[in-house]
Image (cartoon, rainbow, N blue to C red; front, top):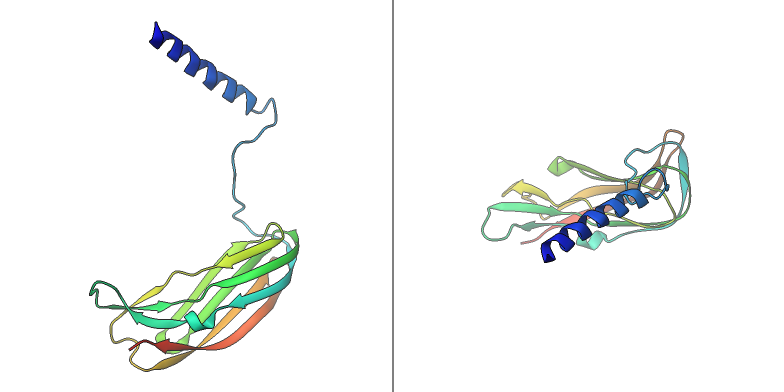
Length: 158
C-alpha cells in the first residue's frame, strides 16, 4: 500500500510541475545565460586591477612547470543599453602571451574578469621581470571603447 501512495504522489507532483511551468502559464524556470553580444554600450563607474598579483611562480608538487599568475579585473557598471561585452586583454610580448577574457554585460553591477593562469615550460621566464599591457574595453557592434589601460611589470618569483 505504501508504494502505491508514493508512486501516485510522485506522478501527481510531476504533472503539477509540468503544467505550472509550461507554455500555458508563461512561467519560465530556466536560467538561460546570454551568450551573444550585440549593440549597445555601458557606462563604467570604476575599474580595478591588482597588478601586484601579476607574477611568474613555480608550479606545485614538482611539476616542472612555471605559471603566469594573472590579475583579476573588477569592473563596476553603472548603466547598460542592449548587450555589450567587457573585454579584458593581457599581453606579455617577451613571453609570447596574449590572453583575452570576455563577459556579456546585461545589467548594472560588478563584473569580475578572471583569466586562468598560464602554464609555461620551466626556464621560459628566465629574466627577473617582464613588461605587460592590460586593457579593458566595452565592445559591441556599434562601439569599441577602451576604459582602462595600464603597463605593468610581471615579477618572476625566485
